[in-house]
Length: 250
Ligand SMILES: C[S@@+](CC[C@H](N)C(=O)[O-])C[C@H]1O[C@@H](n2cnc3c(N)ncnc32)[C@H](O)[C@@H]1O
Image 1 (cartoon, rainbow, N blue to C red):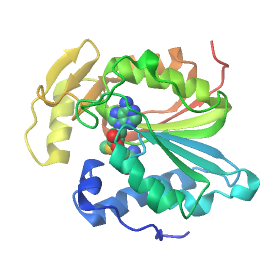
Image 2 (cartoon, rainbow, N blue to C red; image 1 turned 180 degrees about the vertical axis):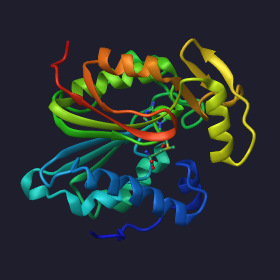
Image 3 (cartoon, rainbow, N blue to C red; image 1 turned 45 degrees about the vertical axis):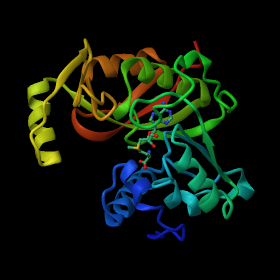
Image 4 (cartoon, helix red, strand yellow; image 1 turned 90 degrees about the vertical axis):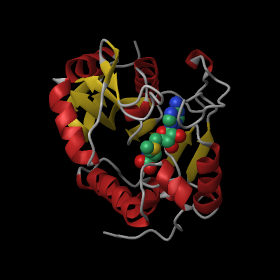
């Protein structure tokens, strides 16, 4: 397995923006997600892959050698952070043209406070429906409100082929007190949680996008309601869930 990518490291502000405060963490997190997908055979040479909230390619750069453009293999990522996308186009697409990155100007309190699209129904996905074999998100739904989470999960269902697989990481709780304890251990500091709505808590009232954690039963039910079959889920700190599109768009 190829361990290192020849794509350079992005500037440290972009590394921090996607949650890595050291270059070592940027490399380790990217490899860990990519290995997770490879070990579960979620990525094949001919696959069309989509990553909503792709950042500056921390994970996708470790998938470059896994996709073969001569067999139809393609990667598409989109993100609201313009600089991340510009960096990825310059440093990844220019060398690997089967890796595509697009900027979407959706408002996000933390990542795109000047975003023009506040009403998600105005967001047009620049992709065909039923196109992708594998769609993954990492540390994406962990920053989204319920409205955005539901919108993107329904959109992912439309964009995924029947039989396609989705892997997404979430923060979830059965009991918020238990989650507070886990997050304190993970973050190395005491956290305060605020009830945001009936199904979610946030970490910071000033910055609601910083950490959003969801009630696990709500999330499981919504994933099924959106037309997926849940294969793997877990409660607590960020972990990958796996679900499959087994029913066509309703
Ligand atoms: C913690 S970073 C993770 C980035 C990437 N998935 C990774 O693991 O390196 C979260 C990303 O989600 C993006 N994001 C937040 N809201 C978004 C939205 N509505 N649409 C697309 N991207 C969004 C942010 O700009 C940021 O790059």
